[in-house]
Length: 328
Image (cartoon, rainbow, N blue to C red; front, side, top):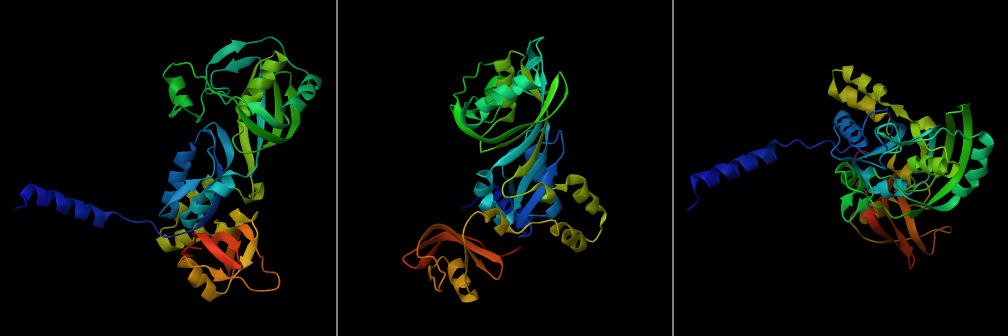
């Protein structure tokens, strides 16, 4: 015999499930120009709400005190996030000399000071030490995991954080400007996992002047470019459109096709019949004079729409990750 309490609980659960609204199956990339003092998670939540998307995610955290490019994936585009996260990034940042801070940026407290100020020539002389593959110790206040915990959580508890160094790659490191003796503006192109705050900290220590990042902007995340940035205020201004369908249509114009995130991979064109088979998880025979014989990773497209990621082996395309096509 089922008790009245159990029945009531089950009824509430069923009503909750029925009452939960699902987002629409919109799919694509939004290249947000994240404002200063706005968290990455907060930004994703705002974009998901604006677009009424069923799911959303970003391709690499940008610190709250940093502005610039935050690629946000909606719907099926979330399946391509790892490819964007692995791409190179370009940052423009200002290093302020004379102070080292606990967070290596303006958010932290001053931990040590120096009266020394570096000349441009001194800075230029040490930049080669930070080119190519280097060993870097992430900041104490970072998302790096130590024994299953985030480094910033350990640091906030007042504990000493021992973070091991790791390899990162710097492709380009330029001095953009030296406005005064206290500040230097840099632009750096780097690989995944590089902490710009650590670059300012380490150069300051090497030169004996100490330093921290006082301004940081991410201007590019491969394969996206600066001219694709969409300011948050441009999107929020569309909230004034009362008709929801009209408002969502206006927002969708800012989305970039899912396939653009995979532009670094080879491309295979398939027919509509083949696309249907692939979306069911089945392999298809690869035909044509230019068809690849073998390929470890390739994208299948049909009429300009991304169908699947997979491999070509034995003259067949084998799907690994399938895209529904909804919302594209």
